[in-house]
Structure formats: structure tokens, C-alpha cells
Length: 418
Image (cartoon, rainbow, N blue to C red):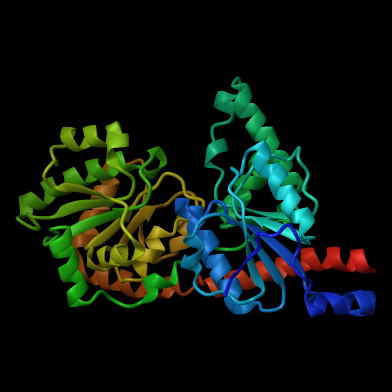
């Protein structure tokens, strides 16, 4: 079970660490036990939270030798399942990018003599140096894509240069795709050899097979979904391109009506509360599809997997993605995917999806029409999608993360006791 450290006293070192003190530097790097802090304060966030849960859960399966401090708050840690005794939770609820948050993290890492800390998302407070090396995961650099346009904004400029210092002082940077690695190197002038590409993967709950008849009946009764539908799942924001998705769907309905096909086809959007996005609501009205577009807000993974499994097509023509998990999640259920030919998405979907120019509404519409009506293409996408999903796994990715931990942390331990 997971230990909770509420005392100011650090926990006891493992026998491996005690052995290295006796034996000195003669031991191999990989026999050194390291003490690793993982900042889990963002576990409630949409994308980063998924990353944290899967990395920690997989570390618990792979590593019984090194010591882990999970630094954060809340009971959501239970979502990671049972963790072995070398994992310890430290309650800490100060905001990540705040002076109290950073001072508090420094104090925890120092008190417990951590050999390194993994911060699983980009931060920007380098002026408060940490007492041990740090590794940072960068999921995307969307916040900085238009920095030059807003260069007169002193807060944005400070944010950029502070983040650049964070990246330059990091012992290692983990990028979730080659596309993100290139963006980091280009925008922040970071040496590419300092950036390790370690892919994301889908949550294991999406790998439970196809939805049962009972599960399909559940969404029919709970959400009144008893018609064919095209699905979008993810956040709602300008880069997600929801306006063009709706416009393309409206054009698709017009084309299908000419052929008398799929008269009851709907577009289901799962994600943020749409009331905060007036442009999306206006597009629905302007496009005349008020009766054919449904916004369901957030749903649990267990429910989302049923929607993936039941959808005719998953549409995801995002303008920018650091990785882009939803297309892979849909593929794991054999659902054909239409997505963008830009950013990281070609790298993620390979040849297992129909890719389009995300800024061309009619190209999106034509792709949806083709995938909907061409059964041979649908079968091909289904088979290639299953194969594409196999290229990404949390176990292989976390093994690489663990190698980075041991390389960085072991060097520190060996130097300290040598």
C-alpha cells in the first residue's frame, strides 16, 4: 500500500543505498538505488493528469528498487491503483507556478534528500533553484507559438525567457513527440541532444475490447443515443478546430441528403462545457444543424470507450497537437479516423487514418463522406488502426523514462558517496 508521509522526518534509505555508501563507486550505475520525487500536483488536469497516472502506475509495476515520493494532494492518487512499498505520498497543495509552491517543493526535496525530481509539465520559475537535478516533460509549446506577435507584452516576454531558463537548466527534457522536440529546440534554442523523445500511449482502460450489447444499451438509455454518429472527443478551444468540424458536418449532411443516405446522422462532441465557447455555439446555429449536433460535456473513460466503439467515424482535424491521444484511443476500438496532416498527428497516426488539411472545410467534409460510405476503406482503416496502436505502450515508454531517472539520479548518488 502507498505510504503517507506527514512527518517532517525523511523516510529511511533503502538497503541498496546503504550498500553503495559502503561499497563506494565500484558498483555499477544500475545497482544504485535513487530517490525520485514526482510532482503530481497537476493530476487533476485533462492531459497532464492522464500522463501522471499512467507513468506512476507503470513505474509501480516495473520498479521495486528505487524510492519514489509522490508530491501532491487529493485522493485521486487511488486512480493509479495499488502501488508497492517503495512509493510514498507527501501531501502538498501549493500551486505549481507560485513562490510558495516552489519554495515548498524545494524544502520537501531537500528534507527527503531526493536525487532528482520529475516535473511532468512545463513550468517557468527557474529563479528558485532546486536542491537536486530536475527532469521536465514538455507536452506542447502552444502557449509560445505566437510569442513574436505579442512581444510587446512584458508578461508574455517574461514567461518566455523564464521558461527558456527552465529548459536550459533541466538535466533532461522529455518530449512526447519528435514534432514537440523540434518545436522546443527551435523556439527556445535548446540543444536537440538534450531532448529525449518518449511517446505517450493510451490508457489501458481503452484496451478492454469492444463494447458489449449491454454497454451500447447504456448509452442509448442514459444519453438517448440510438442513431449513427460522428464523434469528436477532447478539449474545446481555437486550436481544436471545432468551428470547421461543425461546418464540415453541415456540408456533409447536405451531400448525404442528395443521395438519401444517413438522414439521421448526428455529430456528438465530448469535452468542455460548450457554454464557454460562444463561437462554437454560433456556428451550430449559423450552419443550421441545431438538431444534429450534441454536446455532452466530459464523460468518464469507461463511458468514452463505449462512444469510441459505437461511432461511425472519429474526427480530429486539430490545428496543433503536441502528441494527440484521441485518434489512437479511437483506433483501439476499430473506429476509422479523419485527422490533420499537420503538427504531431501524422507522426502519431502513421498510415492508419485519413489525413486532411485542417483549414479546408470541404476537404474535411469529403474525407468524412468517403470514410462513411466506402466499406473497403473502413475495413482497411480498422485493421491498420489496430496495428498503429501497438506501436505505443506505457511499458516501453516508462522503461525509457526509468533509464533517464537512473542515469541522472545514479550519477548524483555516486558523486555524493564517492
